[in-house]
Image 1 (spheres, helix red, strand yellow):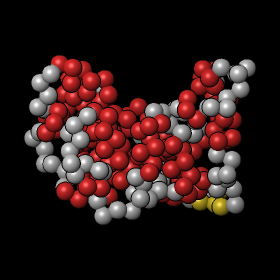
Image 2 (cartoon, helix red, strand yellow):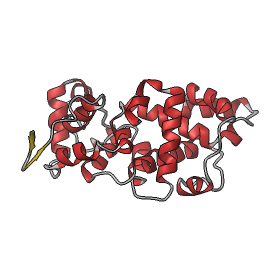
Image 3 (tube, one colour):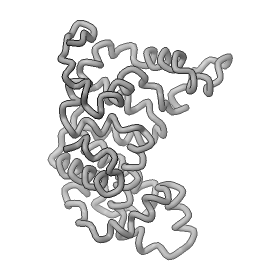
Length: 231
């Protein structure tokens, strides 16, 4: 058993493949923090050392989460659900997955782009991987009408930023209703514009299962390294 605050929880999750990333999420919430959360950062301490020095960064994380004393047990308990484990993906991989979801959502508009300026703009926002995936995604089943409505894409967005926000909303819906302590951690991540949308979408919704199945399909197709987390 592991004691977390006033609670003692089973340690049978320690051998799980996602255990390390879950502990990192709990212990080092500022590991990927966005500069936007550091508005009152002291001038005498440059941001870069705070990013690279684990001690300083973890102190920052503790300060940001000072009202979340009991968060660890809630996060560990929530980790039993495959949907919640999306939150434990390394941030760079999670952002990549969001971009893939955005490309899948926007297939009809992305594959029809003819102007070079549009392609360049899409590549700069979604990345080369997601742009290339859009042509493969044209062969996949389209998102359900309910899912498109839930992520605000009933009228298909044409701009890459709007598509990216749709992908972030799908990521959040796929996780469903998660503990407040985990949702707070999502809001610290960079880029804040994406993670705020994802965190706001973490709720119980009839389209949540569709969103999770979509994310799991995308993981299997493009990020197979993580697929066993969600079986």
